[in-house]
Image (cartoon, rainbow, N blue to C red; front, side, top):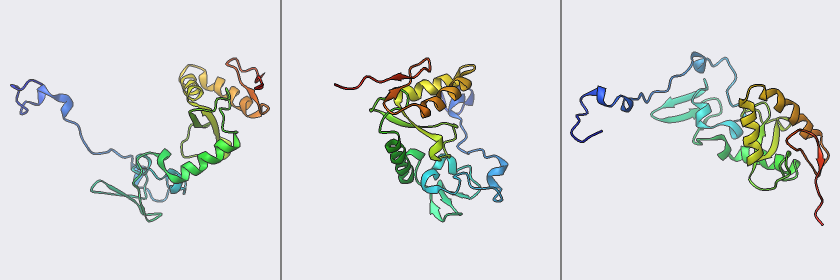
Length: 177
């Protein structure tokens, strides 16, 4: 916007007028439903999710969980102490390596059912950043969900010390000599 333009003319800055109010679905106020954190605020009590929960008291920019009598301060799930404990258990279970390629760096935990609140160990899988990105890229492609659904169970069944090539056929990893 040029300095000579007046802010009193809304037509000159339509992108500057943005509502700061969050629109909520009506069920966000129905306390007869279960909390969105699945009764695990230590793993799932983060602002983006809790804003939509019927048990959240939203006042003056603060968020408070009335069901668990706790303030919600964390912006994202992955900063929560409870999530970090779950993550450490899954990393140990998977041998601190990617279940697809065997990489040991930049490890992520993938939610197989794509529900970030479902922290059941059977739903979690260790992937490196590259394989994790590839899985999510494949999920966005036509028919990709079916391909991912076939590959991930195969990855879980493979023998320790093997890797899963792109085509889905298991190949034994070359041992270090």
